[in-house]
Image (cartoon, rainbow, N blue to C red; front, side, top):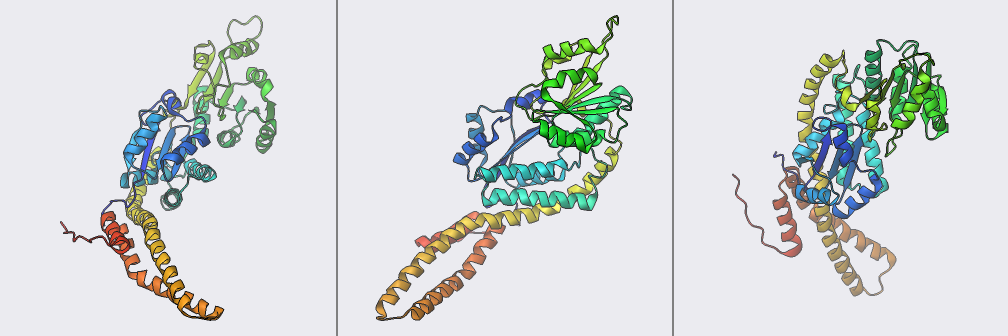
Length: 424
């Protein structure tokens, strides 16, 4: 079996491997639904995956068309994977092999969410849906077989580890978490294991902040009181989904005034860890005396005691995925052949109905039972006549031999010459 695909599949991506947070911010799509709607005008199917450390555009279409589309959107600097290489990259993504924290589980939920969004915008065609669901299944199997996610930390818990490294210990500290979405949950779960004096949870929607705070015995904070509680905190971890900075330099400087006694010359240091994408904290906050600002780029340096285990598990995972890619390609090609087979069966159905109606018109005075029998007979005959050629076309598709499959359909439906093809 070759690794050729019966239909083009392409991925364009930018990730933490080659780009900084600032670089990814430049190509991020703030309105995902609008982007997918436009993509639906160019491609049969499309998926947009945007996380804190990667942006991936996956389409049922070829490399050149995707390049032109992204250029029309004013985005450049993408790495491109096409066809079997793209399927392999998708498997690596779902398995967590391409993540900043190898083996993390969060990517599986992010892929599901990306598919759900595409479905809601009606741009998730059968091939795209198959690809995402197959990748999620393979990613789950990798974790079950290798245990690669054992002891793995998410970006959220890595942020907590970074804060702990900087302060020596979080015991007795006051922590403010800004954001109560998926990342906020991961952060607070990691913080709940520490012996903190207080966890404050701030969010634009106060009800959501309350729900998350209750889970960790924390205190919900109205967004209007954000800077007052920043004054009380040792660490601020930011992880909102806001499209613009939420924490600004001027307000931070005001908050710092309350972090020292009137006669003290030094301000009590404030540690801010910004893991949002786009960033929650203005870059100029970094230059404020007494503030230590870290971003996702700094999380790459977090010491991970389970790194060696996950590297070994990753090797086992790669062996599994190398075997899985062959099954993935076969499954992809069988699904891709459905459109060609639909053309064949539609052609046959038109002929069946025409000839059935001709026969019935010659049977004067036939009753409903005779009509039903005639209809069933022609339907069964048509299906049986197409069985062998359908199997042949699917077999060609599984091998990625699109030309032979198309020639067969053309010869049957349009009377085209079926040229013999020599094998190399």
